[in-house]
Image (cartoon, rainbow, N blue to C red):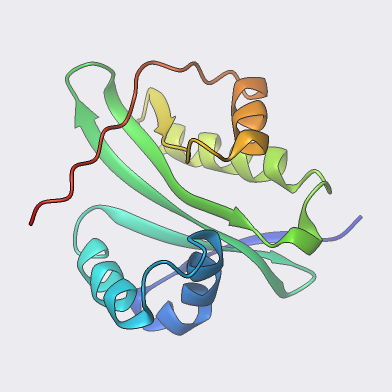
Length: 143
């Protein structure tokens, strides 16, 4: 079995993880815009992690920490992405176990996330991890 290692990444590491975020987003947002957004995100209770398999960057995910009126202290998983060649190896279960353990250490009582509507494989995975669908995520572009 390959050795999994999860390492915290910082805004100085942006060029390491940004190509994976662009893959996840289908290159819909240019590099300069994403760089600016991530620099801002790092200033607001956001943490980024690289997923390494045998020292190779295999994926990336972000975590947001907040206290919300409807669920208490929570850890929101953001932009969870594993490169295609590393999928179906059981990494997802290992990564989410790491996330849940880490969130509990930080005092979180819930975990939450958003998933693109068309990302059916992730929906199956999240439901198998005992997430429940609680609502819809609405987005309005402001001119």
